[in-house]
Length: 301
View 1: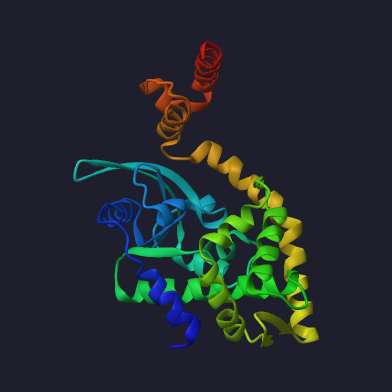
View 2 (view 1 turned 30 degrees about the vertical axis):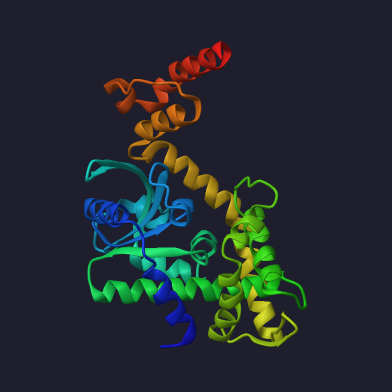
């Protein structure tokens, strides 16, 4: 087992609250999953009153339709009662083979390797073979991300300077609006982790580098630079359009969207919006009425 894979394998076993493990397993079984990855802010804070983020990887043979195969992930909202505690989760799901392919950098997508170079925990898995696939894929995602970090980063610098350059580049390539300094927040939560991770990922990806006085300097060949630059140009050209297509898909296929929106409104504004059958079945048609209630509530305050 190489050093990067050992690092990822240990990180996947990160201890999380039992409610998270239980919720991840329930959701994975609902969606025909073979593995459930837990990530995001609640992984760091442990605040189970917040919204949990899961990525469920499905059996490739599970029917997901053409859209599910070509324009992943599918997005859904779930509420699970675990020992009297209501767990709320936003879930992205996709076939595990598509996840492996995207993690490797063989597609124009940036979202998988940019997301899973960040901490995650494997909270549920169907079998040992699926666990091995997930660990290999996340290690591959880390190696892919580190390669692009070398491309976008300085000639030499501390590990954080490369990760910072990577996240800035991916935010610009995707249809995302992030607050200034978001990349510093991500790195700052686990700086020692990212410092350790970069040289491991470069070695795994075949990128030579020198090290001294807390700085690293990648020494890539011309062929390596050209291959990374060509791949990046393709991702950059398609990134915003790809994410726009995903947003449009989610607008019509987000399972549980109304329950998710109602919870978000009440959590952030204090306005209670009754969840009626009409609103559940026709969220787009019901939206103007909810927005009117929200406006009146904000004026009254």
